[in-house]
Image 1 (cartoon, rainbow, N blue to C red):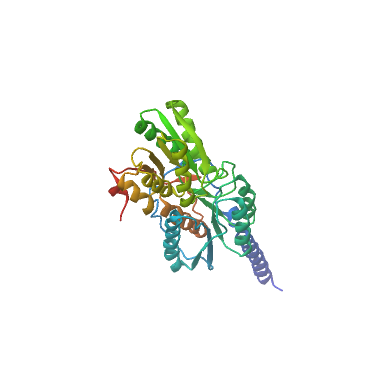
Image 2: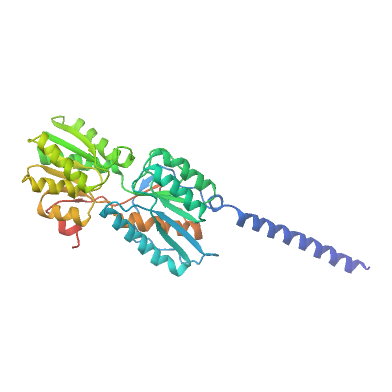
Length: 352
């Protein structure tokens, strides 16, 4: 064997070894969980408004395999229809990218007893990413379990104060919203009167943020406004109707009703039926048609929106962008617009 041939053989062997090493390392990198390959999530409590809220676009990049994203939603009131419309739009936008989006309903409320098993089921079904509510701290271990398995999770609408390993949240700052409505209420009532609170669920932290936020604002700015009772309506308009009637019967001089979550139009209907429109003022949330009808008539004094379309649409698109391009939002909490709507500006926010 001549020296020239031997030298060529040695070079070939070295090249093959290096190539094998590089290939093996590349394969190892590919085999890493996406939650390990991509940048770390932004700080949990960092917050900001995205300029492309409701209009964020998919990254123009085909995934190397078919993708599936699960959206764990609710179907308990008209607000949920707006959420689902956002998910449907995201589904349409992602179809050309070989990405399937499924709307799944794990149960009848925000609670862990539904969303915890819902997360486990979606994980077992092999979804590549999951969007979920996190109404209670009990949901956190389920979220963390999914993320530790390499499946990114985003949360929508309701999120617990206890930190989870979710990638980001899309929704409102409910405590700050309550401070805004508190200010509006104090102005409308002249700093005194009696207020009844109808919340959705005492166990859901976002609802509690709105309830406690009003307490805090009134305590500091209007101690002569008294809260005469607090009940939960389980996000049901029919229950809010009954509760509003009970409050007006028990307190003939009631000044206002504050509804923190679903079904405020039930309370509005009760006030209208009792002939107390304008006398008992109603403050609430969301721009759903049933609520806006009563805003237009002046039965509901004011309501704050939170862009449910974006809450359904944006987490799906942003998760896709994370899966295919490792795009990470700049904030842990992507806050949605919180405009205040009254009879005077209802046409600006309600497209009939």
